[in-house]
Image (tube, rainbow, N blue to C red):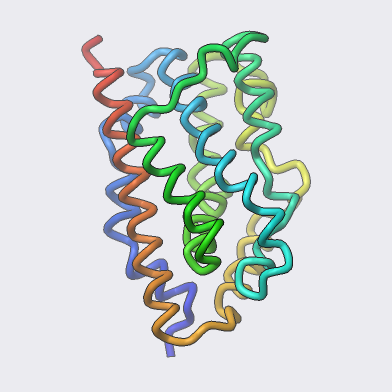
Length: 215
């Protein structure tokens, strides 16, 4: 019988692939866009993780979402340090979400407030992505724009409290597999994972319109 974590990975593969191969991300990783595009992307991440982590405290004791609330994953402080480096000390004064980002963050916040299973779906799609493909972004950013290795500007991608990401991801998937919900709820979570990837792709689409490669 297929594990729940494997089911999520298989069922959301198409949506995940669409996010990874978006025009904006391809242009960014290919070195075709400037550091301003990277900074703008980092700003959008701030809104998403603010929604994820502001609601985390209320869910720490929840039987479904609680096991996933792991402080070693929290990214908001690192994002703020990166934005200080990328945008300067007054970064908050110019921080604005794209409409697609606002929709994504609103959905995360709604799940955090009313649906623990949905929160798990968004938690999974974001944090496991950071621990995996996010490391490619960090490497490219360091080489393309000259950030210090694992230094300010890319600290979002550096999980200092997780010395063995591969082992952590295995444990995370085991926690998913042990989720104490029925089959119907598992299917709802899978559907929300697909929606999360689609929301992420919409953000990339909006960023691509703001930063066309020919600009």
